[in-house]
Image (cartoon, rainbow, N blue to C red; front, side):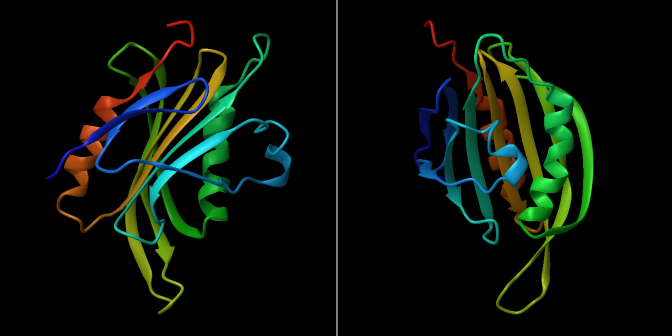
Length: 168
């Protein structure tokens, strides 16, 4: 099992406990989303083609900026396709963090093509979306559906998510 790491990522910050420290990375976004994503920060571990992938993205928004969480959720399908996913099955439910932040959880299965052998691997995914504390926050978990420990890892990570109020 090893030691898990609890860290805060981005501005406004998201606190999450993960098996490894997430490293700053680049998020591929559609051209039309780039203006909205100004100032965004992404932290990740793993690879979309590996056994487990975790990313935390935060986007600061002005105090008067409203984000339609449902529209953001609708954009997830396009985001997953842009990453090479196919046969995407999506389910949606409300999600509340341990410190009371309310958001939307998108989850399901998708197929990712292995670029080496051209075969498709079926993965499960869970994506949390929040519009709180003058920011948009997204936590993405993608994992091989055959990994016996992945569900346990995923639940532990999801249950650790907290949105930090920048005033604290």
